[in-house]
Length: 198
Image 1 (tube, one colour):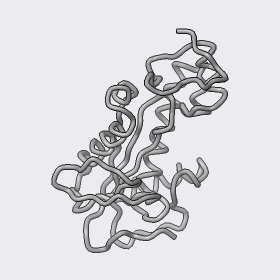
Image 2 (cartoon, one colour; image 1 turned 120 degrees about the vertical axis):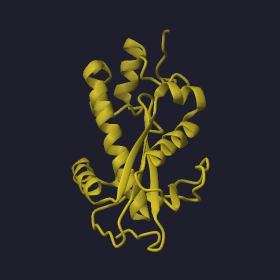
Image 3 (spheres, helix red, strand yellow; image 1 turned 90 degrees about the vertical axis):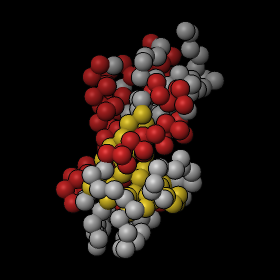
Image 4 (cartoon, helix red, strand yellow; image 1 turned 60 degrees about the vertical axis):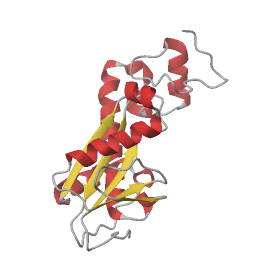
């Protein structure tokens, strides 16, 4: 079972989903869990099944003291790069929390400081601390839903299946029909196997 970071401060765990995708936004979540919160299933969203993530999302939304989602668009990713866009999405999530955190714990090794709230970066924190894992689950489930919704307008990219990640199927669709406004134009959209005619 994952640990609580501290019982003495108001801690917000932060994580994002979608950094490695070729299309769609990067989505971040910030979560403040109650003291003594426990859940045997909660873990890094990447090791959970889709069914478990969706069940946990309902639990987290119901039991968290406060939670929020922040988004940075594909256009913003192209303008400021994916790392800064990830931090921007986290800042937007933190800003929307109804309760102000006393400490932010961030999944990863880098972060752009948020005004007036100290932070601590934790490598693989989504597999260590419950509030980061909770943020991981919310970020992943919200981003997946965005890509499923985008798929309704752009079914040829199969986003409901690949969620914008660089799968062979997705790259083949890009090669055959080109890109649309949801694609990150600063990313390597095709490998050497494929060539893109613009």
